[in-house]
Length: 525
Image (cartoon, rainbow, N blue to C red; front, side, top):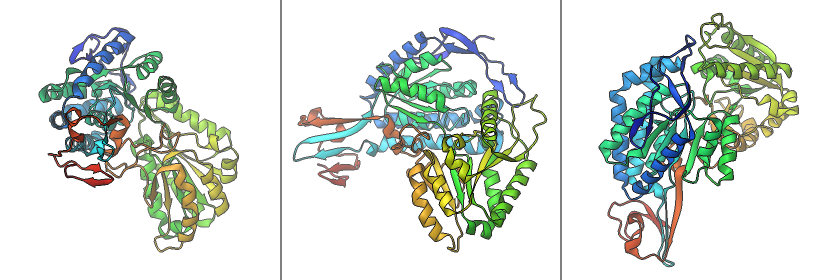
């Protein structure tokens, strides 16, 4: 079969390939039919040149045109939903229903429509006018954005369809999508529909471009190129940090989602009140999607007593009996096995390890539950926060409240952190002492709720302190906040009104919210 073409400057064309690869079906370990190129630098260079030209044109366009593209794109995705879901199922082994068709695909189109609404409204620009000094500023597009998508969300976080893509486009930037090698075909289907929507909306041909894979060296060169405005990356910490070094050296913004153990603290009153319910909630959260979520609860902290021992024993029994899911790739399995082996070598006790008898036929790993003490955790906290990306989790058992506090003080940055407490108030005093120690280490604090779900809400923070992300001041989910990662702040000092961008002129015909002389208003200046 011929090598699939790349999308550059509005045309599907043969890649100047440095090599090729094929995706695999994780459920069978068999390579899929299509062959994809590993682009040489000439592909990257051509895409960057086209994107830079597209950005110059997009800067002169309107939010309405971008909104039209995003809405038409969402409609085209829905018309091709069955084909997209079928191919994503083959490339990831995720169930077609409910995971792909009923959850992830609607989330994808919902994000695109929310991004369209933000682009059309324009308030995300945070137009600010100081009439006394005649200084005016706004946020606007930053330039071509490279989007590196993860392996675990082929639709809602895909490089040509997901949240980073939607935010970058809505802010007026062309996107160079770098597909994840686990699901190149699914990304190709999205790019095909995106191109049609680009043409229908009258946007520049290079508004959306697609490369499937590059060498590590060319990836680092890509994110640091002078023509790039910014990069959005979701993936492994090791690969992300190499890209960050390259981008930082060139002074290019890069927003990373890297790793997180998402600590869950279960207080004594909660266990006494609803132990069986907590067991079910935890099991569902940590094993859903075979644990391949960046918000997977990988660390659970409890105080040692009879009820917590029963709680852990019941979780272990359920872990052992639960079916073993399929992992996304051989690489995910190797990384998970290495993480578990590292913790076991450090003294972790294995509480549960289910069977995976058909590991020779699909990618899988036993459901694994480990236990250590708070004292051991405190003594080598970095080691004990090794991310187990998959169907595994670690219980940290503390002797008392003081040890729980010591564990929380030594946490690295995480996307989420959760505290379960008694609904009748018996844990309130303890909560009040522990929550302030957890809060600085997490982007999103939850109460009595597992962290796995990430709602697409303007109030959401899907970010957190390093190493959860590369910058704790931004979110990858939730509009318009996610757009500000891909925006530049422009200031105009004493510029004549007819030379100003429309959003900064005295008249405000659209009724956009603007800050004028320190007060938000929809009126004229």
